Length: 292
Image (tube, rainbow, N blue to C red):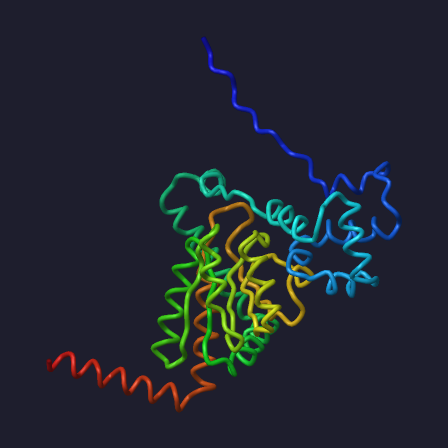
């Protein structure tokens, strides 16, 4: 007796469904629904008043439109947005596609990856990228503490660059848990923090909620990404483009590391005296440890 095949049940998207011609929405409610549908990460990170300002209406109209779409409240809409922004990653498929394109020859594989790294390094030399890194340094320079966000392998990069910043005398903290535990990361944010966010492909729920909180607190924010657009993040976010390799291939992180180290070095130059004093203390502690 064969087991029945598991079938995934796809729930209809109420926001997309509300845009059907027969949905019965008023022209203004349809306009609100279209904006939310096209700008989901931004809508998640915005209040009713902020949405109203972007759409060109009142916050009361936004709330009525959200109810017309089928949600009891803005909170219910946000829950649906969080669900729609959460997606699974498939590193196995990415590796498989990479191997298919490169082949199984070891020398060819190594050469291809090294060439991709060389292409990424060349892209970092573009004047626009260098200008964005400098803008990021200037935005973060006044902040007494830097919080660096990354999930998965990017959390390791966040931890590494925080160690560099701390060694150079700038207090820093890596964050990057997921699910309900991410609330513990959000609650530690302070009004005078600066934020570096590593995010790729799209704004899944943790990043969207992080942007919402950074906007509420008014925190200077630098986004290191390969494809997230300015329209999807709060105004004023400094976006630095970081290639991660070829489309649908394995993700490579050399460009991200280079950007993070450039920002860290720029902050050290901007705080030269403090950095040098901290490194002198570091050397003194090392000498004490050796003599102990």
